[in-house]
Amino acid sequence: MPPVLIPTECLLMIFQNIANDIQCLHSCILVSRSWCRNAIPYLWARPFSTASKEAKLIKTYISCLEDEDKLLIEEDIILPNLPTPFFDYASYLTEFKYNRLKSAVELWVKIKDQLSTSSPNSPKVFGITRALCNLLMRKCSRLESLSIISKNMPDYTIFSQSPYLSRINKFSCLFFDECSYRIKESNNNTLDLLKFLPTVCKDITALDFRQCDSTAVNKAMKDIIFAIPNLQDFKYYGPNDMIYREEIILPALKYQTKSLSSLFLCRVFINDHIFDILSECVNLESLKFLDCRCSTFGSSLKSKFRLKKLHLETSRSSSNIVTLIQTLGNNSTLQYLYLNVLKNAAPRSISIGCSNIVEFHFSELEYNESNNLFNLLDHLNFLEKLTLTDMVLKEGEIDQFYNSLGSHLPLSLKYLNIGQLFKLKRSFSTDKFQHLFENCKSSLETIIINQPVEYNDSDFDYIIDYIKKTNSLRFLGLNCLGNTHRHKFKELREDNKIEQLDDG
Image 1 (cartoon, rainbow, N blue to C red):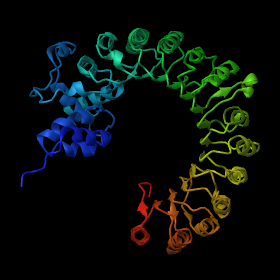
Image 2 (spheres, rainbow, N blue to C red; image 1 turned 180 degrees about the vertical axis):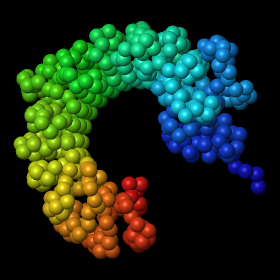
Image 3 (tube, helix red, strand yellow; image 1 turned 90 degrees about the vertical axis):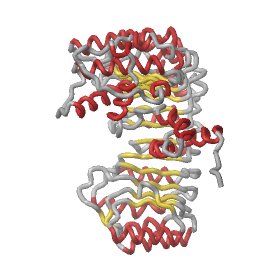
């Protein structure tokens, strides 16, 4: 009986669904010529998404270099003599990360020349990186995303002369402010590219800026925001020196109030004017603040945000957390909330203004905040997912916390993830599992316990009793299992038809 041939249209649908599974795509290219021909474009669309085989990628790309690319490499640098590849690999690129390309070349040179280290500033690394960059930008007819870094940046014309630069919908830039001649030259190349982008890149919907304290760079970034008509996702990292300045980039968001849906701000100063602009973003659904400094809010307290996701991560000394929750989370649309500080007044503010949240993630819990957490959980009647990570609990506090947690879990809860304890000196016993599962009235479908637990047989008995009581558990993840308890864990899953999670 002849083999059944899968139509090309079906193959493409299969490969689209596994486009992010590199290992699976590698297996597909070995099936037949037809599978190989149709899978290769997906395999080489995001070649630098994983670091495991970057050096091998460079060898393949070098085999694709043409004479005009090789002119960018100094004459005394000898490239390996490689056969012409069967596929035009550079043409399949959709996501170009310049920094990953540079790192891969650095690693390839180190391996090829049998060096202990390889400097990114060496002429060989820079020359090959520049040539490959020229190749990729000249061929990447499917380009969607470009990520650059100012260190060792080649002449901006390599990018600006590409006929495909205008097609990108996502742009990311990391800018360094250093004094060496090479860095200054690279920064100038990067700045020239930033100034050029607004003239051709009108389809950008996602921007990611990580910048130095440079007025010229800030102006160039602001001009990009002015120029693009449909910015939807904006990430902005302020300088690492933690000196909070009046922002000149963020006011440009007033031109994106109809399109902006996701905003991430890190190490920036947010005044009343910025909050007023954000409140006018009618489609803003996701907002994340990380180590930001805010002013007194003023008229923003009267603003009506319609967020679905709110992530507030700040220092414990911050006095703004309650006001931020009242300002940003006081709406019925909020579904996801992340906090790392839970001040005394916060539970009431959340339970009143954010009572409809279905997912809550709290990190860095200290024991003196546990009552605030329990008070909050008692009022979240629609909560379905709870994640607790990096808990800062001492040995004696852990038992007390677990003894109380189960009785405060909402009836609506379906997912519980208890993450790693922060800086724990030794593993703790699991007697508290008895109280956690006995007191839990929720019908949990997923339980993840990712902590250095010393398991004993009775722990599995508590879990089995809970399974029988609720008949709801479908997924279970436990870490730090020894050989004996791995076997018991397997038996537990098989007897109760429970799937194991990767976290376990």
